[in-house]
Length: 402
Image (cartoon, rainbow, N blue to C red; front, top):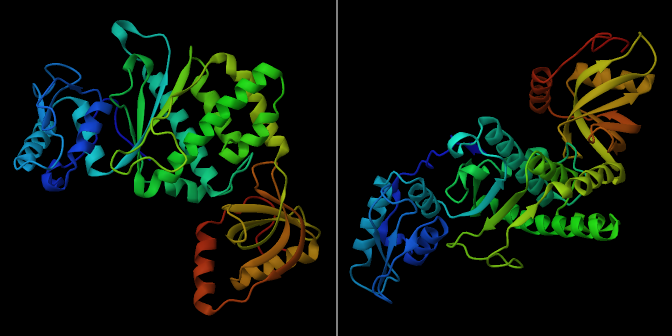
């Protein structure tokens, strides 16, 4: 995700926008979404739009309603130029929506305002942190729904958020700590759709818990994308506020995704929801089972207390599980095999159970420990990667006892 300072417009080169390729209906929808108001115009031909804050931009924009009229491209070109020259942040948000069709996610936190309606810097940081957590939880759920993800799927989830632009948006009241994320449709729509379903499922599960005293609804909510990561993110969003909420809006250029409401209702949470959310987070942590796996990895660390006996090995995972590293305790013979594999520059294969405790970072019940033969080029690559990522700490040397 890419940050930009609060209030700073999204960087967009309006010259890259071809008026002949802009859909006037999309432009009108984006103007309305970002606070511009339609003030008349010739019905069926064009609309006259005024900015959210008078004096911050052009007095008005003339936007055609369709491409059926000869002067459509001229009017669109004039509107794009006026938006690019405007000091109104909402103008740049509209240009961003035209340049890269994106679904929008908005957060807000209702907190006491500072002098003259200002928002403390620390409040903005809390909101940004919570927003990141919410998006990461949704991205994790697109890989595989789970009550607790731990370190699994993190690389793929973070990669799915690389194109997201995160910053203060015009739809959020600064006094309420408004923040907007733009998720490009090409790479981020799956995340937006999962977040849509997960938020509503979380809201329903909290309501059920508060009404009946039963947390059972959180179990079924996992299929919709609710997880420990999401409930903890919502706790971070709501804690220290009088209330907080999240709203989604679909890209008008891409349309409404299947199975989703055309205009999703904002999902709001209050301090009274915190006990249910915290209880659910603990429930997910305790309830997620260990996973049987067969992992291939490069040995990056070995440690044991003496020259003989069992020892602990750290592997950089190459295949078999979507986690970056694992630790595994091996008996004396298996530990020797791991040391020999390291010295030869070969990956190690081991079967066992990936434990949820600790975030799926530990493998237990190790069996079938063996070095994996590879060709010379692959061995050189693995040795280089293993040495770059090694972190031998304490204990004996990597080859001790081999």
